[in-house]
Image (tube, rainbow over all chains, first blue to last red; front, side, top):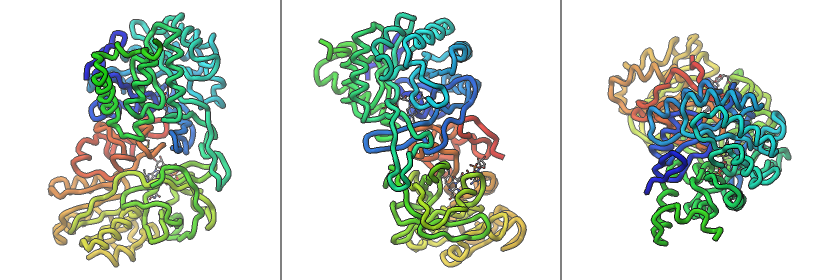
Length: 305
Length: 263
Ligand SMILES: Cc1cc2nc3c(=O)[nH]c(=O)nc-3n(C[C@H](O)[C@H](O)[C@H](O)COP(=O)(O)OP(=O)(O)OC[C@H]3O[C@@H](n4cnc5c(N)ncnc54)[C@H](O)[C@@H]3O)c2cc1C
Ligand SMILES: Cc1cc2nc3c(=O)[nH]c(=O)nc-3n(C[C@H](O)[C@H](O)[C@H](O)COP(=O)(O)O)c2cc1C
Ligand code: FES
């Protein structure tokens, strides 16, 4: 596989472990690179203090994907900064630190402390759809809040590039992406989980998730991800980490044709196992060869022409 | 197999002693010894439990009252519905001339293993320990299926007073043991491991870690430093796989992912 350049980074292939999947520890992310073949990894989203998240059931398979309300559980910034350090010592692939905050001030503080660990990119999660009851509407549902978060994170990120992770909700993903670009974002990650949605047990007649509602991921959301990336690509010049519903190489190619530079993969680990990264990277390569292209750059955004 | 959530009524409940019960359901899935199911108590939580027995048309799990969830399970009645999905994880492999070492509720997965081994006409010896008599479950089954069954309790209420590790080496020698299976508290296994590592006898241990998804997605159950998932690559690990596990007997992670001391 030809390596790919993304911002100032070099990846062995365009696949990236999406946030919230196997991203809790250095050992886990190391294995996703070494055994799974991922080109880069993203940590589980973390904030200042540790959180247990929602009770189980918090992750539910259904026929076309997963419904999850993990509730942003994480061991807090002290532990995560250590894990990022350990990963960097042990693995050669880039690591993206996914951060969130309850307030603008917390975003600033988490950015300052995360930067000390020198991750290769900061991914800013403003779009988690399953913590409404606790956090209120996500920042990513409002243009002005998204602008503020982008601005403050950029201010403290120094030379580390910043990608804002958006969802397909709120005022429209293209407008949100534009605001991020105007406030200095270096990239956009699109999309987060979709919804929230709900599943009900028909025998006990109650919602199954302890949080009742959760974000939808996996094959069910691929068309929404493709359209989101397509819209964002038309609106901004900064590169896109296209994420959502990719389980096969053909899915990844669709996102690239829509405008993605890298491909985030999460739920597919459940369907295809940890080697899904290598499989999809090879499949993308095979697609390029089949049509005589020599690099990803040649097909990125081709669906717009 | 079904990873999708469905609830099933409890068909039968057996009380082994105070705070230790088995729950029977219809046989909604296949499983092999060591594999587990996620059990959802609506309104409460969902946790992993080993399958302790399978019949032609029933499936059994065995639970010890420990914290809030397992204690709430003790109040359940026949007909109450629980979510059961799985089976998850890898099972034990089959070997002749084996020793089964079980501690406390860790005896549950070994019960299914003992049944499978005896059905395959493989010979084995059992060494079972618990804090006290009423936590020793399925003893009659082990006595029926094993060549020999050794029992210890911490308080001497049944079998020999003491720990399973005390006579371990002499039993291995006397019974000419060629393979060891262990399940139970990690501290028990760490002591067993110290004794058997120098002998070069291959073994498998059934591990526990806090789990959220059971399907290899959340990363909550991943072990340092090998990075393997207890819910997918485990819960049964062999001696080679355990060599790369640096946290064994030291730390595990809680629901937030923070490291907490095991003991
Ligand atoms: C693969 C797997 C198989 C399991 N099989 C069984 C089984 O067959 N029968 C069974 O009763 N339990 C089994 N467990 C444990 C079970 O999932 C629960 O953790 C247990 O019932 C306690 O839950 P709780 O909410 O009551 O207590 P918690 O509040 O979870 O427990 C309180 C504290 O005790 C610790 N703890 C929890 N369970 C145990 C335990 N079993 N041994 C030692 N320390 C523990 C926890 O780390 C916690 O700090 C299994 C766990 C795993 C991962
Ligand atoms: C169990 C689970 C946990 C997730 N946790 C996070 C998270 O902490 N932060 C985040 O930005 N996205 C999180 N996501 C969203 C994923 O990163 C991804 O954007 C989404 O699942 C769509 O991609 P997929 O279909 O490939 O999974 C989570 C998704 C799942 C399934
Ligand atoms: S419990 Fe989620 S990866 Fe094992």
